[in-house]
Length: 357
Ligand code: SF4
Image (cartoon, rainbow, N blue to C red; front, side):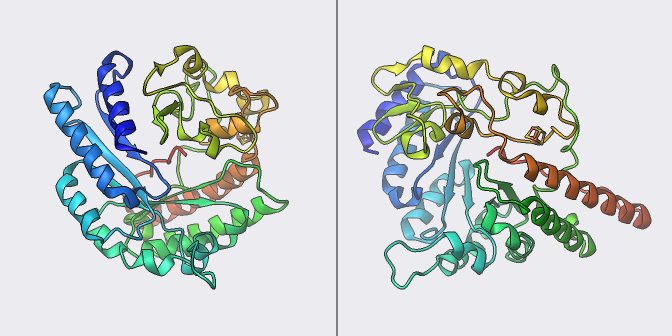
């Protein structure tokens, strides 16, 4: 993204307060790898702060800059200077997938031969990151090939000092016969390790939540799962999307869903379908009546990409059997934990919050 496009996007957003009525704002830098462009990002953040002040905008002092980084150049002088400058308004998550074996399955240097994973280059920056962001959490995404490594990966992340592991299955249709059983077994083994070693007292894993696996009310629990359409994504050319998952580079089958650009603004007609999305209007009857519906997530972009026609009103349910396996493992986890707490008279740990995507 050029500086000119970034500036036009910020100006558009700040010039149209009536379209962005939120009390606070998160400016989220999504790459590729955002810290490769730290100089540009620093200039963008300075401009945002200056403009918020100059306009006496209600977001001044009510904003965050958010980053998901691969962590490779986290300790570089420029990134560290940026962190020092913006420390109180920053959220930074470093993506590390688990053990070296698991991480290096997917994350390899593009230009290094023979193939080399990036685990060692990331993990050396974890202590500095945790020193600066002690509550830093990491996000792990599970696909079919990753299932055998779930338990060891979560425990490994705990051993690195990461207290919050946000983890979820991909929404795409990648699952094979028997994956749900394997997944359930891994989660039950993880449950045993967390409870037997008292990790539940200080560590969280979002796979285990007391609130999942219950029927949902058609009226009371009818919200949309994700925030597509209630946030604004801007690409390098200055096009607007309801979420970055609707940009062409994120889609397999469908055409990009562009809702405007930095020069012409938002086309409200293209945005309108997103504003009436709720659980019942996009779910099949099986999901509406499902006994274990709560916590069963969807991704609006994947719904669109996997739908029979170019609609966002057809929920993709490839995750169904994985959610049911997660519910079974949760029953095991909470039963076992409650029995232990009853015996020891300990207080119940707080529930982790589920990541949305
Ligand atoms: S996808 Fe499956 S588990 Fe999820 S709500 Fe629908 S029927 Fe239930």
